[in-house]
Amino acid sequence: MYFTNEKILSIAMEQSAVDAHCNPEDFLREENIIVTSAADPHARKYLALPFDCDLISYGNNIVASINEKYRGIVGEYISRFPAEHCFETPNMHVLNDAMKEEGLLTCFMAEYFLPDLKDLTAQDCPCALKIMHQGDFENLYTEEWSNALCKKRKELDVLGMGAYDGGKLVGLAACSADCEAMWQIGIDVLPEYRRQGVASALTSRLALAILERGKVPFYCAAWSNIKSVRNAIRSGFRPAWVELTVKSSSFVNEMIGTKIP
Image (cartoon, rainbow, N blue to C red):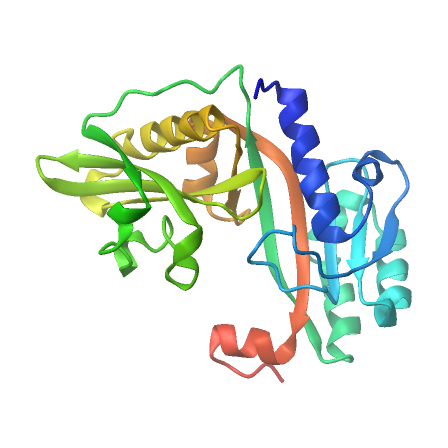
């Protein structure tokens, strides 16, 4: 497939539309949109659908994919603040407090990146590089490679790029086939090999390998994960969309190991 930046963005919006149960053009509107969330076999594999509330913005507006039970709460919230300020504190406390009364809490906040083909190049690496496939990952589902690989969804880890110092694996970028058209990149580098260009070399080269296979690479980072965001930028990725997801309080409490009163 021949890719352009415009085609890549269009594919991402089409996938977000599947995930949110809306139309791709909804992300280009000036006004906010509220749609009813629904399960879809073509959604990203790791999403737990339907959503109670998921806010998505590509920079124009907010598309809120919701359980209809919360239409009033969500509608009031996204109409109260500009789109970009609905994804940050202190405004976010308004949504959290309203949802808390329903047994829900704001949970996931993430920024998603897409490759910019004008800046995506195969970057140099001080270590030897090797393309890796599913069979190469079998013994790598350990803590040190837990960003690159996902033990819970091994079957989705389809392609990787490893950096080696002699026979020692020192960096790994791998991607999961989270949906038909888009593969998500994760990256890990051993502490003593960081700040040497290993991460950006692995990420950029894996992104190019994904594109060669006719898929769109994407990269996700928490807004506060400066190291990860910097790697995305260095590797030729640019911010594309943001999401804020509300989950049950029991789910949040289990994640953090502490009961929120």
